[in-house]
Length: 619
Image 1 (cartoon, rainbow, N blue to C red):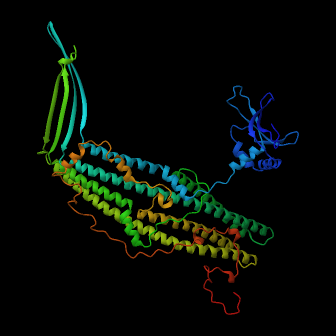
Image 2: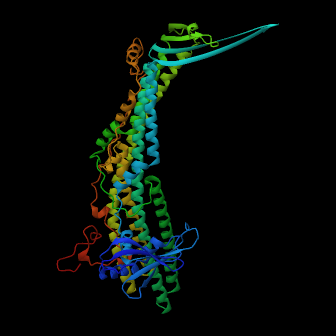
Image 3: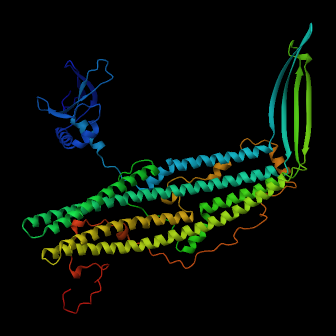
């Protein structure tokens, strides 16, 4: 291989089993000796990255660094099994340190932290529940096309061949004939059944759109929840690990003091018991983190890497009355129930149409004649056309029974609509109060953590002078760890409550978190297929079918909608959003808790009810 830094072409050198050296040019490299040394140092320091690059089943050995005899450059040698070699022998490859350094730098470059917007974009594109509902919604669009096609003609071709053989005693005869015809059937009037079925199909399309919107909101809510849970549980694991380290230090200190008879065996046992409990708590925290990572994978579609802090969620209401008003208009469950009621009301019109007459035009044209021997001139042309009008007279009360059944189902759907409305109001109330309570808990929890850190540091100092016992120090340390874990959970609950409130209002979708995601218009997708395959006769028959038929949009016979629509009252106002120092500030490690003097107490901690100091007295 050409000397590094000499200006000669660089080669990838290989040595086969006979010891012969082969060179493959890699191109011109003008590399300085400083670059060679830097690459060699980088390669010798990044052992973990080497294992990632070459520690694979196909690699027999780790890379080995060696110096050429002339001392000009370093080389890295490793063996690779070449299974594609017919002889089954292996080759030894050598790479320059510059190439190795570039490879290691490329593989060890820090990846950009994944944001919540990235997670939402991935879930929006590939979440199975969301993709499934999108295709179901497209299938519902096609049901509308199939229903609309009833207005148009149906055309078919019929080909028939007959052969007859007759034998009577000694006499026999055979005959054959065939026909080829075209049949056309065109409905003219259905008594309003087609009109009602088309309105029912349109309501089902709108219902499917609302179900899709609800599914999207739930997927985005689950994405936010799993993302925030991973962030929370990683911090909880760190707190639990710091707790174990602090307890180990406490246990080691008690054992050392026990050797010099400074404490009793009881103190050592107390520290050991708390250490065992802390180790169990750490194991549970690690297990919960693994569960949260699994939830993230199930929703988003990949394992969580480095996650960025949580962003703000826009669109929160200023008052609960605003939340109620938005939920009534935009909640997906209310919208789906509203369109389900419209579909059931259209079905009443369909059943009423069964009482009315129907009219259909049928036409047939074709050729009929003998097939063998075949003579085209012997075939005759037959053309028939007929208008069929059908009026049901008596069916044992079945038609009236279907009408009453449809009306009862519509009444049930009206009640279901009111039920969904009440459920939406309840969801708003729950999310609103959970958000308010979580915000108060975040502020109070921050105060609790600060106070617990001061108390723990003070307990440690006082224990050195014999003013506190071992169990008191351990209790203070446990209270500090518990308060930190509680604060992390309160932060998670506060952020999740925001998403729950937006979901209850019907305003949580992918664009709420990531405005760069293209807006999807289900109505535009429906319009793409709405008139696909329409025939010239369909608009005419649609107009004729309106004559004397029941309107599918008429008010129901029994109006039950909105008879009882109570709204919750007396709800508390929402506390202001906590500052970033409460929701995002990192926690101070347990071992770093420090004791501060009274004149340096933070304002949030206060004086704990102590009387105000007199002028000139130290605090």
